[in-house]
Image 1 (cartoon, rainbow, N blue to C red):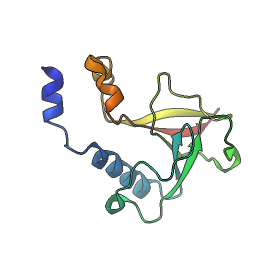
Image 2: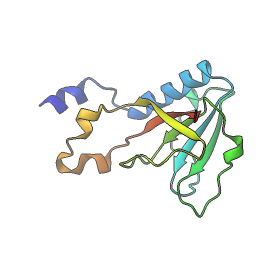
Image 3: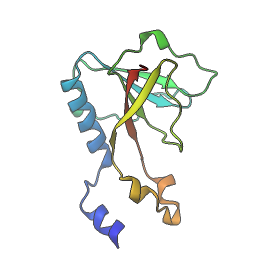
Image 4: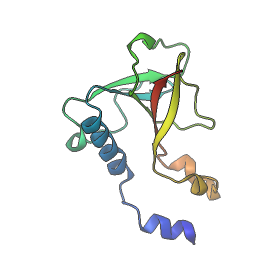
Length: 134
């Protein structure tokens, strides 16, 4: 019942919430890069909503599969890692960095309940800001 009430009060298109977050991130962090973290290459980014794309936002991919190389020298404090395939636990931060979760759509308490395996059919993304280790 609680899940049904939560679902009724949320937008019908979850991608709009993610795209709006990326828009606001680009507006508030103009020098940062958004990395879409995924296991392996795909033809396009999962958030294809150009009306919410911030004009100067740089968007790149970051692969968790060790077969694909990532440019760790290009990372800087304040960049955003947008996980398009949320796993538990979240993959480790790049060497020399730590990650701080700054956005998630579904609260943790909702994600504890996986009746009928609803999470496998739902887009569950999370965003993490990266910061250098101190």
